Each structure stands twice: as C-alpha cells, then as structure tokens.
Image (cartoon, rainbow, N blue to C red; front, side):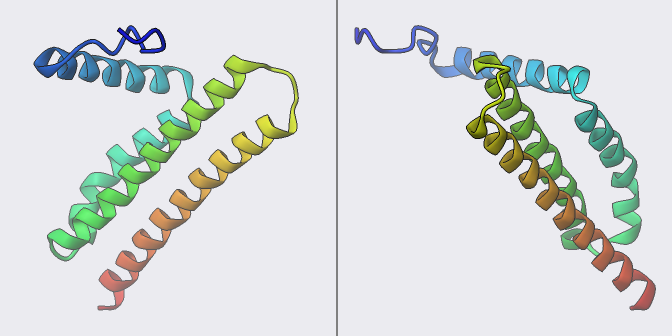
Length: 129
C-alpha cells in the first residue's frame, strides 16, 4: 500500500455511499448549528419554496426559483468550509487568510444577487405578464 495514501479512503460500494451520506448529514447539521447565515438562508428557502409554486409559471420557472435558493445554500456551505479550514490552520491575521475568506464571502454575495435577480424577474413577469 502507498505510504501517502489516505487511510480513510478504503471504503467502496454501498459502504462508501452510506458513510458519505452520514458525513453529508453531519455537515448539514454542523452548518445549521454553527452558522447563523446558513440557518437564516435555510429558513428563507423553506419559506420561499411554496411561494415559488405560486410565482413560477410552469415547472421551469419553479425549478429556477427553487434552484437559485439551493445554490445559495451550497455556496454558503462552501464558504463555511473555507472559513473553518482557514481558522483550523491559524487564527493569526494573514493576508492570504483574509483573501480566502473574502473571496468565499464574495461567492455568497454573488449567489444571493443571482437568486434575488431570478426572483425579481419572476415577480415582474407574474405581476406584469
């Protein structure tokens, strides 16, 4: 066996899938418990999903409305992961740490602006179409 191989990567098949699912659930729980932004965006998504069915005019629009919110949650999870890794390495103020966190935060902002634009366009279409 390769000395540099990750000892945690030995699972295959259904065993790997079940463990990966468990890790994903743990990640969602951890993000919800420890990240207020993720909690807020989760609740916003849960509240907005029924609105998407009213606002959207067909399954494509409904999918875009809900999908844009899911993208926000995904980007927020990645942002939180990057912040956790940076903090794990060091709490020391460093230009590269700041840069990584700022870039991840910018990704969240862009995902929120995208979702807001999609929802605004659908609302405009619904009210003026």
